[in-house]
Image (spheres, rainbow, N blue to C red):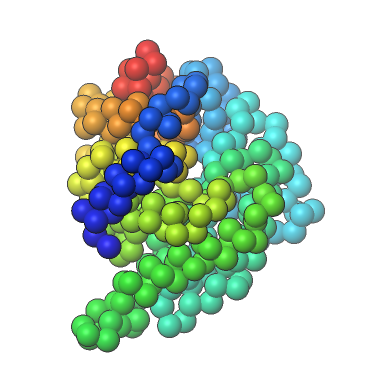
Length: 303
């Protein structure tokens, strides 16, 4: 299915009152929450600047490769942070193989399930499933009609099957895994929001939802309309400036984000927007925290 076909089906779904309906999500109350991908040690400065949450890494915060006893110290640090941990990224390490002829999902599923259950313990609502190293379709997984070309459809189906099986395993959890599209130079499957939403719809579980990374959308030239079509399936966002992948407002005026925030406002989005980016000189970190938050609030109409 291409994007045009997807948008047509999404419009039909909206007409029938489906999840993609804009009217259904406009009624959401509250506001967009803002965070940043930083460690526990930075949460005091983030709180002072006015941020709502922090986003850590699965490996660093949840440590699925360690025993419960080994994780206890980090668990206590996360629970004692100045801000709540709302999300974690870096879900599946590249040491696991999710696609291709050597795909071995079993150990990755065990790792992922442990991460999800620990996320519930610390109150982390979303685990970001980008994981390009684990999901990229290897070159030796060839398309039968095009030699020396990865079979991207089969790889995509393997990725979707992994998500579906994980959703079954964590059906009793509160955390949701959010599919993160990565721009074409970082991943050869799931490059666009609309492609992720296809998988979310196929699985049909609240445990698998969608993320929109504004940096990747801009780099991949994906229209903001994909956010509208994602509707209430969109649960989390990332943001960084296009040119230098820095925090909003460090190099630019934020104009590149205008259509995307307009789309978020249109669907009544009240999820998180997390800065996944560089912050410039260390000495300017607190100042840049404030600059970025002020710009994002302005874009969101919350200034």
